[in-house]
Length: 99
Image (tube, helix red, strand yellow):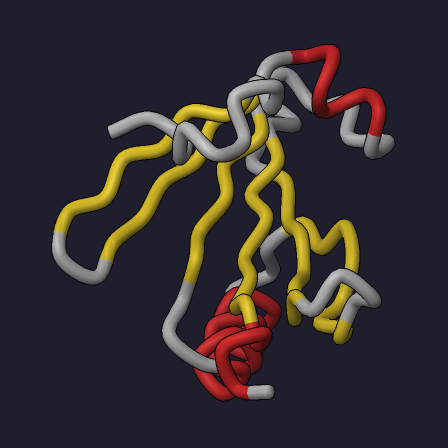
């Protein structure tokens, strides 16, 4: 599945299987948001609580934390970690559906 046709100008691809959603973007899109890793993976969870729980688990496992959980103005609760190759993983929940 690709990103919804309603937003064709966004260079974002996505795959959804059940409750799992994966979004991948190109370098130009990532750089416009200050994301300079080799690859950026977006992990979309089901609630703010899930975001915070996963953050706590990864922190306890000594993951490389790039940013801590925060409610962003664009209505995502998100944090970011990097893997050993500096690929970025953005974990988020879109809380617009809660408003």
